[in-house]
Structure formats: structure tokens, C-alpha cells
Image (cartoon, rainbow, N blue to C red):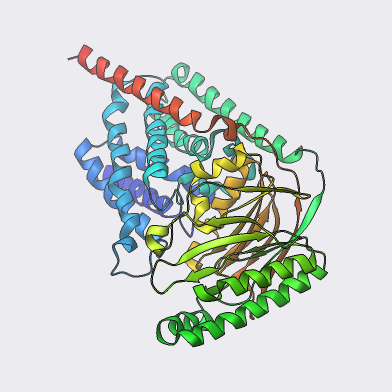
Length: 491
């Protein structure tokens, strides 16, 4: 009998570990995110709190490190390389809290401690993590758009709640399988909520806001940032600055040539990827003048994202939007991840510009990982978000899905031109209009073109913000208090 129990427990541990690994990160798939809490809770609810904390912290730390390998750094000598491991004890506390409170409560309340505390932890990470909230459980559902549409009401937190409540509820149902009367109502409630979410998401996709037309947008980059040309460029920056300037000039010339071609093909907005081009500070005025002339001559809105190299102060990672009149109508400094890049930190205040193609805004790559900042776009009625980005293979395509989620939350279309990653254009419902993976194209030119809606949509999330989270926090406090009172009552 003991042998059967240990085999069963070992199988549960194995399955929970496997599903945990595939629930997020580079190899994530949607179903695994639903199954990992189901199996892990089956184990933790049968063990003592100290054992739960040690065990769950360990497997979450190891699984996270492997699933997010090279996400935060590719250098094993850097502490940032091991950042995913720190998620272990954080999420281990959730399973420990659940194991302590679960048996003190009855009915549906006992199933809510885990999902409510999970939402709280993800919210804290979102607010405090300088890397942003990439890696939150909700992003695992990016291929199931009807579920992702919930982000337009609750942000990612409602999706996370729905996922982890499923595992908690199924375990509770199993524990009470002989009492059909007790489990009936909670099961019906979850079913109705789940069906409502799918119905809302499906209707949002089937019946989008009436289109007021589209605009042709082209995105380009002309070199491989992490390939031979990119590596040679950055080596020259440190060893032969004149050679660096010559190589930068060459990249600029190619960018302007492709820009002209795409404008003549009908593009009204052209977006260069992040770090296009890298340029010495003393050469920036010349670049801006060329961009102004190009925008005016071709009659386009031109978005460039130069990386300005300074020799005596921090570099600048920023973007400009030029109008068809050749004027700079928007300038933005990157605010996400500056502590790692060592660049000038932007204010985090999003700017907008009204055009015949809707209200435009623009951010750079990592900026999109901060939903509380990006919600400014929803509040100000942005129709199209232009996002030059620069990724690497290990975060392709997950990082692009973060940007897609921000579009759903705030009701704008997104055009994301990504050097060394997945370039993607989506509408306000997150539906793909065009995409291009850098690694699928061989050569020295990467161009993505999309017809993008010129009107955004209003979302509930952009108006109420994280109200769902605050309701969850209040609910969790009430349940914990009730649990504490119940434990004192029976002492």
C-alpha cells in the first residue's frame, strides 16, 4: 500500500514539474499553464507547510531557470542570468499559504486562497520588478484569443486568476467527490464564468468596432544586430571609432533606400527597428536632417529609433517621429530596462500625435513590459502604437506577445518592428495583421508591411485600471481573516 502511495505521489510530482516547465517561458503552451497548478496543489495540500515551501520553491526555481534560460542575460557570470530562480521562493510562499489555510475553510472559499494570492504576487512583481512583467502566467494563453480578450477588462490578472482557480477548484472537487451537493454550485459557478469569458472574447473578435479605414505601414531593419555585421559594428565602436561611424553611415544609407522604396510602394508610415541605426552623438544632427528631408520628400510619417553613442556620458536609446512636413512631432526616450543598458532613462510619460491616420504614439521594446505605464495610451485614446524593438532568439516570440497583450488591454493597434525577434502587427483585438520572424529570413534586409486600422477601441481596463486586483486583495484579506477566526474557534 505504501509503495502504491509513493508511486502515485512520485507521478504527481513528475507531472507537476513537466507542466510547470512548459507553462511559461520559451517553450510554453497554453494547456500546461492550466495543468501545473492542478498537479502541484494535489501534492502540496497533503504535506506539512515547511516541506511544501522547500519542495515547491525548489522545483519552481529550477523549472523557471530552465524555461527562461537566457531571457534576462546570456552571461552565467552575471547575477541577472539567475534572476528566474528567484521566482522559486516567491511562488513557493503561495503554495505554502494555500496548504496552511485550505483545510481551515469550507466550500468555495477554500478554493479562492490560491488564485487570489497568485494575482497579488503577480501584481507586486508588475509594480516592483525593474524588468517589467514578462513571464506572467497569462501570456501563456496568447494563442487563445477569446481568453486573451479578458485583458481588455481585467488586464492580465483576470486571465491568471481564471487559470489557477481551475487547478484549485478541481483539487477541491476531488477532495469532496462523495458530496455532490457541496461541489455542485462551485462547479456551476466556474463553468458559467468560463463560458462567459469565452463568449465575451468570441463576440469581441466576431464583432469588432466599425473600421474607419486602414493605413499602410512598413517596418524595416537592414542588419543583424547579433550577427557578424552587428558584432563588428560594436567592436569598432570600442577599437576604431572612425570605422564605427563609417559602418553606421552605411546602415543609414540602406535604411533610407528601403524607406524610399516602401514609401513609393504606398506606405504612409515607415518604422525602423530599435537601434536603427547606432550612431555617434556628433553625427546625430546629420541623421535627423536626412530623416526630415526623407519624410518631407516622400510625404510620410517616418519613425526612426537611433541608438546614440556618447563618449563622455550615458548613451541614448530613443526614437523620433517625423511628419510629412519634415518636422519632428514626437521624441521619446526608452524607459524600460535602462538599469541594464546604462542608457539615459526616459520619463515614462507617453506622447501622442494626431494624424490623418488616427492618434499615434510610440515606445521602444522593453517599454511595453510595464502595463501601468502603457495604460496611458488607452486613457489618451491612442489608435496606433508604433514600437521599434530589438530582441534575441530566446525571447522570440514570447516578448512580442507582451506587446500584443498591451494592445488588447488598451484598445490600440500595434505595429512592432523587431530586429532579431518576431515583428508583428495586430489590431485592437490582438488579431495578427502581419508578422515576420527575423530568423526565418536569410539576407540583409527585413521588411514587414501591414494594413492597420486607423481607429482604436475603448476598453474597460483603460478606464478602471487594476480594479480587479484590488477586489482580489480585499477578498484575500477577508478569507484569511475568516480562516484565522475559524482556527481560533476550534482550538
